Length: 474
Image (cartoon, rainbow, N blue to C red; front, side, top):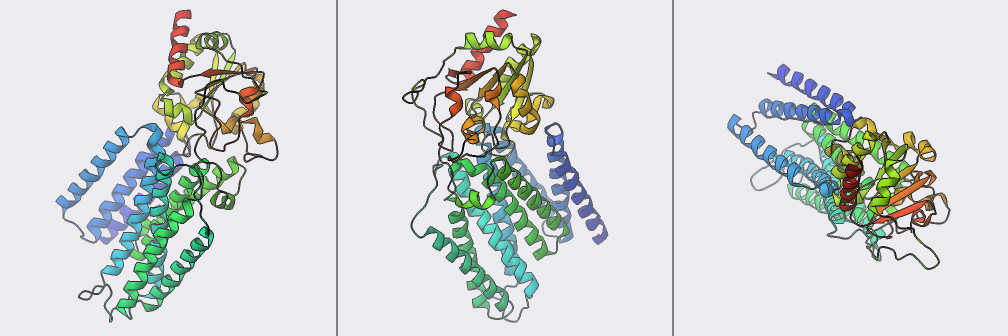
């Protein structure tokens, strides 16, 4: 049986790696996710059988309950709320890792004591328990703060107070100190071991809150990726606590992938991770104001769905730039239908995807995949940026900071940030409710350019109107 279990772990690890590999492309990401999930199922069942933890009927019941909750969430949560759901998943992952590590400590119970005085926990195991609890609890509380910011319950603005940095360093120092006490007292004084692990857990929870509340809404995509990495590291640490190879492999893969994604996101904003974590950049997206209220001395050129229809239907190439506003309006299906009608008229249509468009990594890819937009129509920023100068119409749908030419100018919060060069297109049509700035708070210079036409209103309604006009032209 031991050999069978180890072979099952090897198969699970292979499925994790192949699944992660297939997640590199939107065309194979769904299959990759299924393979990785299958690997986790194999690993869980192998672990339960290995240690004879649960009876078969309890395993089936647990799988049905968990799968049922997951299926309901996946189908009921709106695409605009998907980043919040990912944050919650990260939080529960970190909490699960910490609780499993604490349960490993609790098995050394002697009467009412958490650790029997005559039981040897082992310094190595105690150290990995500390890592698992520290990282897991920070991930848990930090992820739920991120959820609050993404959902608007806490607001997207950075939260700061006098002495916050000191309090954060104090909590970190306290967590390290009591972690050391736990390792030193393991197998010795039960009361000291219990007290130190409890204080460590509470300190880590508070630390997670203080690490995330000062970060603005504009940086939440990076925070979500980083917390995902933390959840993987917590799982890997718990794997060392249990001596479970599958957990070590899966946690390490998640931790590494999450950190690589975090670095990619930082590079996409031309900012360092330290700056993201301490900069307090951005906040809530600018409040919607009157549609055509331009700042004094500046003018905007408005357009209508009818004019946009004529403009796009006689173009040779149209590049669509989606942003979070597309997710809010749930206009992806209308946008896909519009693109198909344009292609029937011989227009080349492409989608330009910025790495930090939306509220989480890959948000726009998932949103467009939901509308069955062909994967070969999606182009990353590096692939498509050189084509805007030869493009007749750039159609910006709900994107803001990622197309703001102010990023090329020094002295503002998005200076140096790589952007999509939509302003190089012959004509730019921006579908947006108002002239409000994005999460950075920087006024968008694109709105006032001579080549830009603003199509104010709900993106779904505007796209519907354009689709109707295109059908009438057919």
